[in-house]
Image (tube, rainbow, N blue to C red; front, side, top):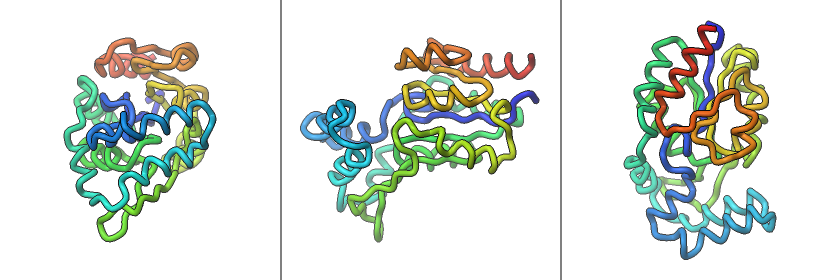
Length: 216
């Protein structure tokens, strides 16, 4: 095999929703009333990423972790994503997912899609209740910071890795990995630097591109 490992973004790539943080707020009716302004402040450079995450997480203090996890039970995968990812796993690829979202979808795809490894940010809980705190494992725009650990863990070189993502946060992966796929990209720069642009929302196109480049 020319490539050995595939790194996937989660929100907006494997799943149809574009942000775990926003998804929780929308389901709880908090997005338009409160949380939207935090996102605007962060993108305007008025608050740090850590502060942005802390403000979001504070809204959920005292809620049961199981309640939040149930919210993610209804999240839909992108079209044909589950079937295509399972085919890639059977073909022998190691599968990794990294996200600046929260732990609930990574936990789900580890169980349902049999990923080899997944990493995201985490809401902190104590005795089953959210404390309002958050552990930031991956900061916005910093997915490249954990690549060395992933390469070492799976004994692969950058040129043996494929990455699939949809947004600005996936640009660092596209610059380092051997082959990069932009999936229905929301970022002009990601689309420009990626080796392949998947302009549909159908994962069959991703699968076909991976099979093609792996057999070159």
